[in-house]
Image (cartoon, rainbow, N blue to C red):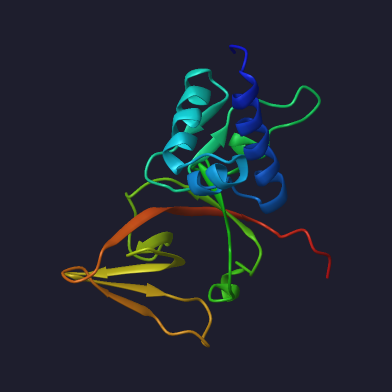
Length: 181
């Protein structure tokens, strides 16, 4: 690993601290705001430099797609790559209780394998326009139903001819939010 400049170390430390506090990496806009950059593009340039130096990986297609590749000298990896099959590419903090009946609760970290190769019945992270949701996928022709696992919530029906829809990844595991009952 090549030595980091002072500014690159600040960006790296911000990413590491943000993951430690929230369970997910910051967005480019959050990095820019916290470090006083004029735009998210400046943050992106620093991220590319960190990737070239081998300390992070940029996961394309995700606003929070930053993975740390180095360990603290006295620390351990944030998530053991062998912990989930297929491997988790990122963690997503769950907001809401729409999937509680299968054990995905508000505040949990959802381990996600970045792929668009998913089948009906699998639990996916889906993007509808600018909103992200975790639901069970059911695709029929030009319609996608995103099914909750909680009877208090209604399915989300997406007309693929009228709405922007994409699958961000496949849910591969859950890390409980750390609060004791």
